[in-house]
Length: 239
Image (tube, rainbow, N blue to C red; front, side, top):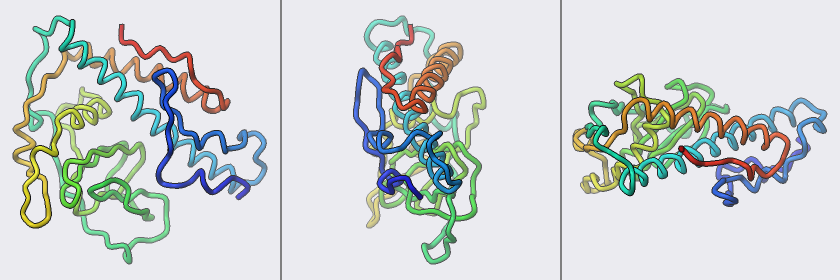
């Protein structure tokens, strides 16, 4: 590949500019149109997918924080409803997959702390949410692609199909599940305690508006990323 390998590390360095997160790694990539060989283009496309995934997580977090900060500061909240996490989602166990049993591939393998490696087969279709169960309990990870959660992790199955998965991802981060860790030798997360966590949830129409705004920002951001511009004109405002 003619593309710098530093761009394909698992962690993507980010800087913040005008309330917008952008991977510094992007600026090491050549313009896609200048890449001639197929393997390098595949690398470029794979890295761009990672960048857009990180962009979605960052932007959704910004919008979620704004929505919930407004709730507590100056919004009329009488129509917000308190819901238990157990009424919104189910946490399912991952399956064992030792390092020696993994084959070379591009399917992310998720442990309790995030991506723990790669494999050639998935257990769950993406996009998805993974929650640390043992070792790093309560850590919440997002993926846009099909994935394989192992037995130290839990993955999310929605009960409420009308609630966008990316909104639920931020709701789980807001829930501070690390407060519900059981320390029995190896720290672990108690699913039943998590199900009982009560959180304020806005009406469906507000969530729809939130999700539409996120989609608009992602479309603009992705277009500007592809042209290697700093996306400084994104108006992260729900109003």
